[in-house]
Amino acid sequence: MLTPTHFNNLGEILKRRGYVIDVPLNMHSHGMVFMSSCSTVHRMLLYISDLTVKVGVNQVRDVLKLMDQERAADCVLVCTKVTPSASAALKELKREQITLVFPRQLLFNIFNHEHVPEHTLLTMEESRRFLETKKLSVSQMPGISVDDVVIRLLGGRIGQVVRITRNRPNIGYHDYYRVVVNLSE
Image 1 (cartoon, rainbow, N blue to C red):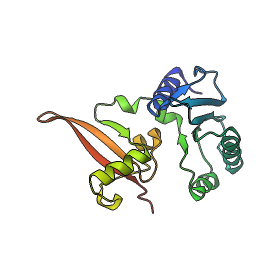
Image 2: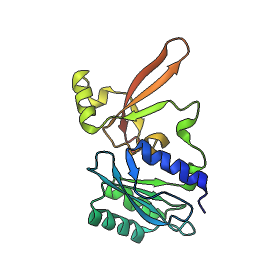
Image 3: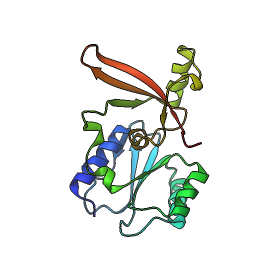
């Protein structure tokens, strides 16, 4: 069962991804909630599965079908466990717009941790312009894994540039840039 802390931290993740929650999230939320981005161009599906069962291939197919029907660009799927076949199906489909979030990841707000610097994802267009301006290719940039928990929660996609703002005692705030890569391939 999800607690108010889970829902508060889930709301923070969605807000950082640029989505406005159409209905308040609470402990009675179950199933589907649609949200729109601040630009009102993109829609997102928040799907909270039955937390007592594993998510299987059929449920993943249903979520994908629902995303297509509702023209949702992204999906956050909250579940406790995923069957190996569902996990393999998600990797095979390469549907980066589905983010799996497990309740244990919502127990605390990772973005407020003192050792986690501010991460800001540039849009794909901003990423392209950044690389052109700096006269860099993706292969010349330091990478950050698409499976990094912060990148995953923010909805990072392979090839996207992330700005990491660190606060160093002797130099103050300083920006570092990395490109999202798939380290498992």
